[in-house]
Length: 353
Image (cartoon, rainbow, N blue to C red; front, side, top):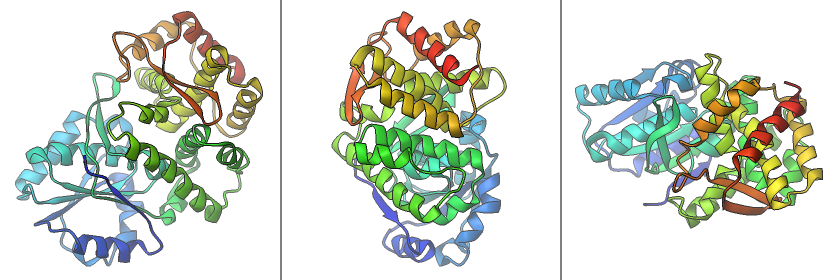
């Protein structure tokens, strides 16, 4: 699997145009959703290669990241004469980069793709690393592939278009990256004021966060080993997210990850000796800025059952990534069902739900 290029942009339009000039493709297509078409795509106006490019727009929201939408995109590509040498430019958040990447991976067995993430979540996580996917049968990213884009162009100008919920969503992944990195990064993310956002500082932190993921993905592109570190917070987090869909009140991915981090750091404390002091610091920070995810004791079995479908599981055993300290990652950890249910209790007690 070839490595992807990541560009932290100072002049997005110029750098995008320059990169597209370097690629030999026959036709360019743009994929957006209804939000990014209105708020973000206008920021690319004036890029000559986009002037006559067909723009494919899908409904916004992760609940629309499904095979029906993928089929509609495939149909547009067919009808517009796309070939194996065509290029799909994905302009949007994680839903667009996940789904657009999957479309590119599967259409005619693979066409070129380039990601321009427009949310914090996509910038630091979804658009980087080559994972693509769609939701299926009520499960998050159940169908997908490893298919890195040719390039990811990140521009902090898009971050100013975000509402608070989407900013918080992406920031949860930055907290995760800091936890698996080092104390300096950990201290920086937990001291950042999410009520009074310093966008210049956030831009520097985004570059540092992307570098953490890039380093890990380069070492383990197909998640056979250390890349599993990036799953911290996601085993429980994906179950929380899927439950929210089932209940008809979906939460953003990063909000689910934030809740999952609390549960999984509790498991880290119970099974790997993660310091309670640091667990308390993370809980305090997340309680300060993040809304609670409300669920009941009678949801525990459904949550546990959802976790049994997690893609990281092996031999029917739920597979966790945990920590013994900041930057000290323990992959391939198994935990008793009793402790998993305790971690649900810990989250609810921490947030008073």
